[in-house]
Image (cartoon, rainbow, N blue to C red):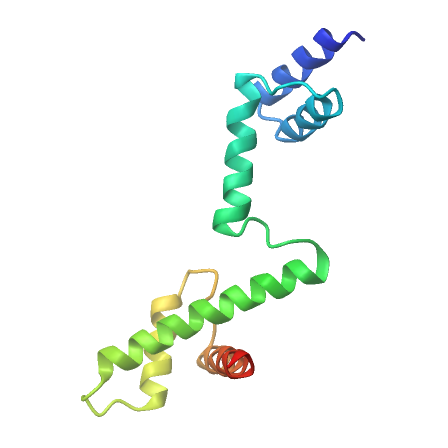
Length: 132
């Protein structure tokens, strides 16, 4: 297969929705030290931006799981703190704030029970104390 045919095949696969084609094409152009064509530059830029700015997949294996778990802990803590702030001065208990946070997180990736939200809060608190 000639390089032109190979490149055309990558583009065809990409246009048909095969995301792996972007990776294969990127490797091809990198290995041949060639500039990326316009049809490839956009998807590569988007993938890099998503990975570095939005957190992407969070990594592989245990490292990826740890990053995802830490992100969930942070999200749960933000909602709990928001619940406490909203309830301040109303005689709200910790249980009330945890329940409000649980309701606000329902349907989101960080959803969980009041106990899970409490545990996330303490994990974040402990991590912050270790950094200080």
